[in-house]
Image (cartoon, rainbow, N blue to C red; front, side):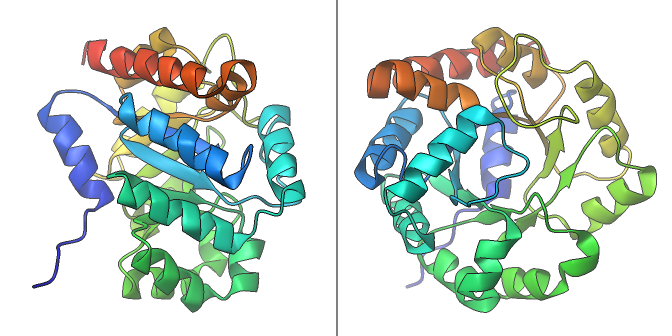
Length: 266
């Protein structure tokens, strides 16, 4: 008897039934080592993170700030490859987590579009976030993703036009990734004030869940975003925590963020 695949939609539905936002955590595969990244992700899952973004290390991460760039560089120096990412995806799935991959387009194209989608699906992956892939160039990926039950996830930003938001909404599955600022990734003292307006604009175009990323680093910030968004994405803050205090610090941050999304007034 076949086992029904867990989906991103299932995770958002569960969070909605609990009247809260979904907590999404990012970490590059292979950072600080392959086993180390799995250990950190397990700590995230065990302390309230609902969905894991497994970062595919890439040599030219244009959207990423210095914290993620340094972590990705260390992963690449340690020998991380696309196969490493798929191994980490499997480890997340085996631990009971739901993994999605965050990747620039070039490594997926190099690996083979159909091959990547099929292997990711076999390893328990649920979706792929492609920050630099435009809708106009996405047809081969959309076909491979849909064929293999992988949710293609695209981004919108404060600069996105209404037409672009509609195009992204039409092609995205799982959730819309709303980048809260125009800059690169990185934890900030304050999350952009443009985020609530962007979420409101996207809500007029789609019923898909909307997750906000870029800048979240504290439980209070997570609570603020969880009051109006369906998901809260945290990346750089987890890497900083790992740098400063290893697994224990990552577990503590995850617990604080999880409490934040659960305390939000919605």
